Image (cartoon, rainbow, N blue to C red; front, side, top):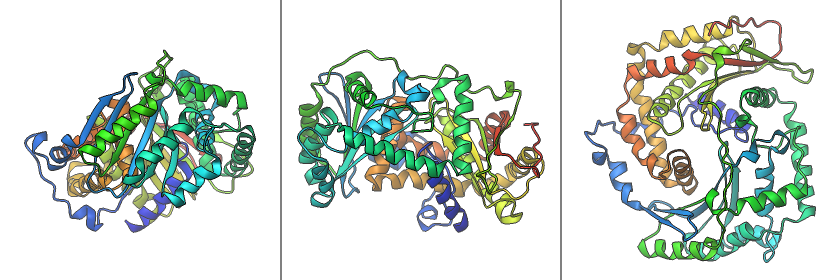
Length: 470
């Protein structure tokens, strides 16, 4: 299991800029995981994590309609705030992929009032760090800092959001940096395969346009200015915050948020949405896609399949199954047979949610999809999974519980819950739901996800025969 944790670090490093990895093996032998006692509570209100956290959320709305959710988290040593900006239809333009990412990056380099150097110095003078990220369905701009500094840091942060400098010289420097990063990534078979996944999926639904800068990107300085203007729309914005706040802190923080953001206007916009509920892999005539390049000195495989909507009850079942699959694939492919250097599972998270199987540095796999499928089926029987399910439930539960110790993880949980369910506190129900999952749920989840069909992507090599039967 320790080896499995190490190999997932590689998987995260390669894919994190393209997708959100929800699963991935975390050792069930860790003290923190095994210390959790699994119990079946009769009602949600009886479950401790839910009952202890339900009242910790304060939900208000600014006069311009922006929802504000502040969580009191007693175990956190710092505080954090994020502005969530729902992606609009323009973010599906292939030639503009990475525009939101570039715009957010440029915003954190200073405002009309505060220089780039001043913003950077906050990390040393106030332990304040500005952050940004782009997801499939939203992007976010935020900061972390000590709780006692949040009011003054928020004023500076708000300046960079509302009236950033958007310096053209800095823009050109950032573009050059991203171009250099692309040159290095283009020789990575894993990166190229994942790019191919997005390009193939976008043929049937432009919703799957990549979120980051690619070789097809054509972004000009004027695009960034327009993108920033589009961010200043109350209908696209939600604000979340967390920290070791008391009631007075919450009132003061809401007042400061209102002072800075209540004047943002409200305009209609076209929301980015998938045209289809799921990808119809069964109707695709080709179940295997090849990426050919003389630059590749190793072979990689990625399999993509439909999984339930994020934050749904069925997704929670799948996430638990995915931990199990992650361990099984690594054990069979790497540890037992040394057929590849790495194997694991991950997720492209979105309104149309997709699971991923990734196999790196493949040495030899005959009848790949058939062998993988048969191995999983053999180990997915109720007797086998019953022996392991409690361990994986402890891992998943501990992941949710321990998120309360981290400002970043709490904000991640709140953001995903808010975007996909409309309720930032939805995630605190998860330990209760995990406790209800059975071994039979593993088999049912497998049949409705991997069992429905996998689209395989691979670098081109001669020794591997692909069975397209699943």
